[in-house]
Structures are given as structure tokens and as C-alpha cells.
Amino acid sequence: MRANCCSLKSLRIYSIPFTGLKLGKHQFEFDVNDSFFDEFEYSLVKRADLKCKVELEKQETMLILSFHINGVIFANCDRCLAPYPQHVDVREQQIAKFSDEDTGDDEEIIILTKNDHEIDISGLIYEYINVALPLITVCVDEGRTPWCDRTMLESLSKLSVNNGQDEQTDPRWEVLKKIK
Image (cartoon, rainbow, N blue to C red; front, side, top):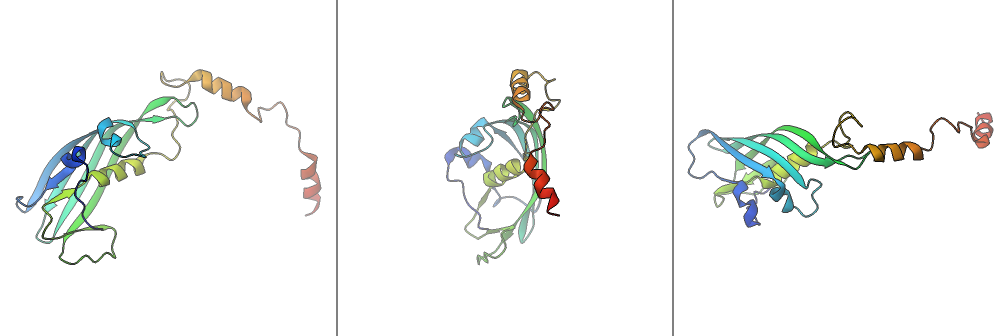
């Protein structure tokens, strides 16, 4: 993976200049909010209030980036469709290696050349947050929280196909069971 510099000026604040840093550990902190996700056209996340703490450990031949992203994403419930706060706590690590040749075979390591003076972490932050989202987002304590849409849940319950009243088995299944 090749290091990329921020193409959008608003994401430029998510670049860490490493050229003047001494060897050792350095701390950085970033706010990740709605304006961050506005820069990503097809982002699943639209609203958020997150803190991203990055520990950069500079060594002779590489940088080790340790991420801790904590806060709230406002997701839409897949069941009642209401927006609700989804807590996120992400801990990830990324290695960036100093090298003159772009090996291109290892996508887990970022390659930094002698021409690179900063590392853009906006793409990493975006990726870590989106991967941390649950596959199915549902309100916690369904129906008992202020943001849950109770009328939607009641409507879904009324429209439920199998609500216990029509428990008749399709006669075609009986024919198929005889084939065994």
C-alpha cells in the first residue's frame, strides 16, 4: 500500500508530519465528526462525535501507528428506522515502512518513500470506523429508549406474516416429506 497525501483540503488536518520528529513515541488527537464523513461521498456514517487518539512510534526503518477511536455514531436502526446513538470503541494498529522501492505485494504495510514527509491517516480512520459498525444496527432495549420509533415497531408487528394466527402448513410440504 502506497502512502497517499490528502487530496481534500478539509482532510488535511488528518495528516501527521513525521519528518522533524525524534525517534520514540508521539501522541496526536483528532476530532472526527460530521464534516469528516461529509468528505466521503458514499459513507454509511453521516453523523458522529468521535475522538481519535493516535500514538506514533517513530523508529529508524518504520512508523508504528496505534489508533484508539472512541465515541458515538448516529446510526439508523434496521428495525424501526429511527436514528440512535451507537457507541464505538476501536483499537487498531498500522505499520508504515520507509523504503525506496514500492514492493506492492503487501497491502497491510504502508510504504513511505524519501519524498514523503507526512502520513495521511484519514482513510485509515474512515476504514476503522466503518468496519467497527455492526452488520445489523438495532436500537438497544428495543421499544424502551427515547429514540426508538414505537409506532413503527407496532406497525411491523401488525404486518408480521407469521404472528401465530395462521399456523397452517402448506400441503405441498407434506408431499415433499413423503419423498424421503
